[in-house]
Length: 316
Ligand code: UDP
Image (cartoon, rainbow, N blue to C red; front, top):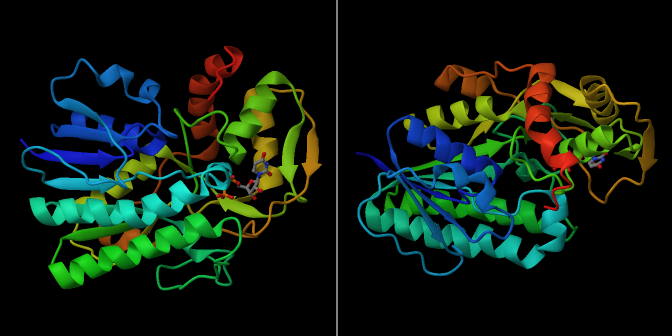
């Protein structure tokens, strides 16, 4: 039986990977310090004999008993609000944490996959973003703690590959949404859906002309699974290339929720990227992968998970 370690396994994406690897017959070890992750995301797995949870902060020495075939390194605060509130932890987990987990991969002879991000492209001057673009990041701005930590993590991953021969993969994840996102993580979708369901004004930052490209979580997981099983060492973008302005996105959420909410414009946060859209031709070519879930379908599925949580006044 193959064993996989998922750091950040109690988070939004990590917990979906716990499900996916259990479904595909793996033994799953989920590691999380529960700073932004939650036991609620993995509670349904606790009775499963192939699932193990270790509460641990990966910036400290990581110990796992027995063999490991794969390691998915997903631990990190990941929303702009989170890394504003946890700037040091964000830098530490991307740097010290990635170093520790790479050390574990080397010791176990495990294949290592780094969850990197479209944020490595910063406020991009190339559009859409290809993997060959080096990015436009402000290292000393408020988002720099996340962007630079992930850029460092990519460099560290390549160094472990080149110097120690560790078998590595790097995925650059673009905006993703779906069930289990934290309602209060400050991101556009949870903010908009909460406001829409409660009938409050939708807070669009700036004039809403900035764009993003939103990928449904099941599409993302399949793309990343295929990358893990491929032999591609260089970074690969995984995301949905269908680009939408934030104002249009707010209107989509209003439509899907059937809400009477209006739009309230608020100041644009510092260094907020003006455009973002993945060029996924590499993933299409080498992984035969592309997203299949459209925005309306994905928003409806997300609403089913969100609505009871919003109405219950969930605090996280
Ligand atoms: N945004 C917004 N209202 C909100 C939260 C976010 O208009 O209540 C905007 C934000 O300024 C950005 C976009 O929505 O332009 C996506 O933000 P998010 O925090 O989801 O992620 P990002 O792509 O910026 O990392």
